[in-house]
Image (cartoon, rainbow, N blue to C red; front, top):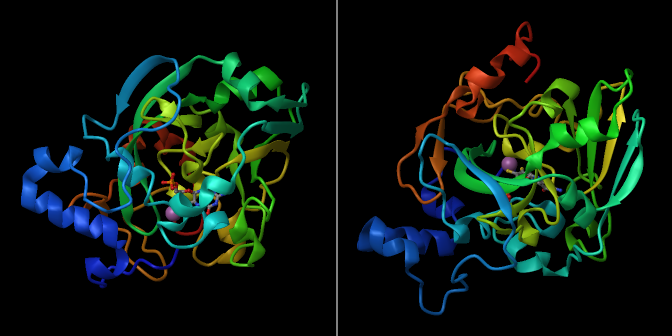
Length: 313
Ligand SMILES: Nc1nc2c(c(=O)[nH]1)N[C@H]1C(S)=C(S)[C@@H](COP(=O)(O)O)O[C@H]1N2
Ligand SMILES: [Mo]
């Protein structure tokens, strides 16, 4: 996570392929570059994988153009498959995403272990275009496919003691070679307060661009919380646990002075090692100002009334 420094030249922090594509983009102009492929480069010709039946589509990124499939699927953070941005797309083929069981447990009236394909039948799938922003200051606009986490929460009926929801990624060093090294404490864990979990913007995601989610993006099911930094979006989820106390989260365990439980996008509060005021959309040349709550403040700011964003970041 710490590779980005605002003072590094772009060529130092951008994988060569994207850097080349950016040069190509400048040479061809926007219209030419989108469909163009670099000869010999390991690029994807277009969305791969099975298409999903999507019941509704909505633009929640104010008409911003979605980042190309190729960038969303080759510029990833998924440390279970390596720490470089292009490691997940190269290494995540070893993850077996079927059959896949998600265990729903803890403070719920209907605890259960549910197959991911059963889960998909419970709720109509929506495509929502969201702005996403990594704490490292890169960002994307992503057409996710999934369903509101709140629908699942209601279905399993949390008890009155359930105040938080804890999520856990698969732990299996055979399938996830990055887990053979102690770069993070495994398995990756994340959490939300109950009101964040049932907020209508919060999604469990199973697809991208109308297709099944590629492994490197967190198949078969991952969390997306568009007003928070990307690290809240825990991938390849096997456990959803309803709990009374605030659960531990991977990055705040790793560096509690740098990453907090809330992780709301806040351009006004610097990360201890860098400014958070600006971001670079992958595929764009110039940085742009970061929006409070990633642009979703009108819908979520009231959840944090009374919290000091410098203490509870
Ligand atoms: N299990 C797991 N989930 C994870 C991560 C990870 O390393 N492991 N990285 C997080 C971070 S830091 C970001 S920015 C997003 C990136 O999601 P994307 O690759 O689909 O853009 O995934 C998040 N979820
Ligand atoms: Mo991130």
